[in-house]
Length: 72
Image (spheres, rainbow, N blue to C red):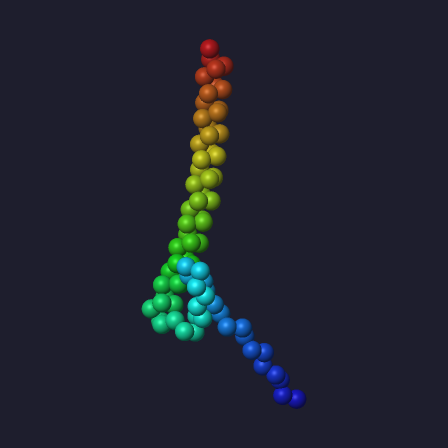
C-alpha cells in the first residue's frame, strides 16, 4: 500500500497586520524572522529573571527592615 503524504499547511507570519507566506520570504528575511523570534524569547527570559531578582531584593529589604526594627 502506498502511503498518502499529508500536505503541511503553509506557514505564515503576520507583520504589521499583513500575513506573509514564509515560503515567499528571502533567506535574509527568514533569518531576520528567526532573529526576532530568538530576541522575543530572550526578552521573555530576561523579564522572568528580572521578576525573580526584584522579588528576592524585596524579600531581603523586608528582612533588613524587620531586623532594624527589632534592634530599636
